[in-house]
Length: 240
Ligand code: 6PG
Image (cartoon, rainbow, N blue to C red; front, side):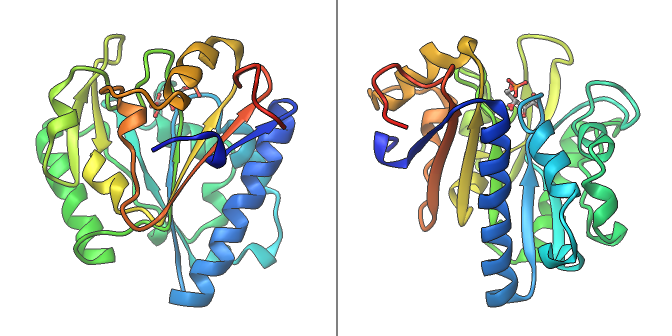
């Protein structure tokens, strides 16, 4: 259930990125202290770019040697292509701070996306056990209510595995995505929402009306759900 209680409203995109950085670092410290590692799933899109760049500038205290980067979703394109979420994270310099063996790339270039979904699910289970519990999953919100590459009314929402193939209404149409089942296993699901174009959808989700908007279906069963929104995306009546 999403309510005002798990929403924090920040003044602008810069404060959103800084706050998101602090939240990620806090979860990293706790995960490393508890289990010796921090497994973070990265989101695509444009909103998280500033957060990745700020994280990349952090010093050794972040404990990057213990971080594992996963991908919440990936477009079915090669990693060098502009739409690639891997390229977004790499160009932010965040991936350069992690040991290469601890970067778990979703291979968008795979000729058979279904097989890549199966392979990635095996990598998740081999690394994290079953169910695969990521420490923190970064998520964005589309104006249509999608998150990761889980789009409204698509079969991906019903997938029973850990990773599936999603279909977007806009190119690149084919995508790879963690499923709602995997997101439900996360210790923390952290949404980052910025921009006036997201305000109607965020208000609808915060109203917690029954429905099947993908972003409203993310419910960590034994974890926390937190929404960070900048003032332009937040409903007018929410306090900062
Ligand atoms: C993707 C993302 C997607 C994104 C939202 C918000 O691969 O595009 O995973 O779910 O988070 O579309 O995107 P913006 O941050 O660009 O608004």
